[in-house]
Length: 97
Image 1 (cartoon, rainbow, N blue to C red):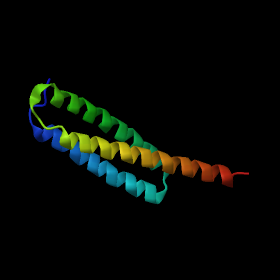
Image 2: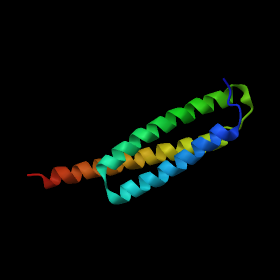
Image 3: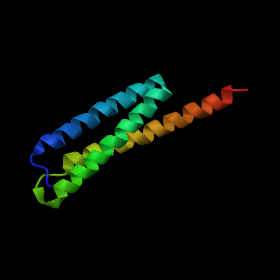
């Protein structure tokens, strides 16, 4: 089923931007629980973006450019959070006797 309008795309773009900002905040706070929670949300949004891109590609005539940018934003946030979590885990391992 093709996307009916740009509303769904705009919502996904806005959610990806909000999650990107929340991810930066969590990284700055070095909060592993918040980072893991945001990773789950980012995965869910990424799945929705991929689904919407598929719908847009399948004949709706809607531009997929905003979705592509949102997907890149989500993927970059996920990668950065993964690095932060790995660093936090390494620090914890070094502190524990």
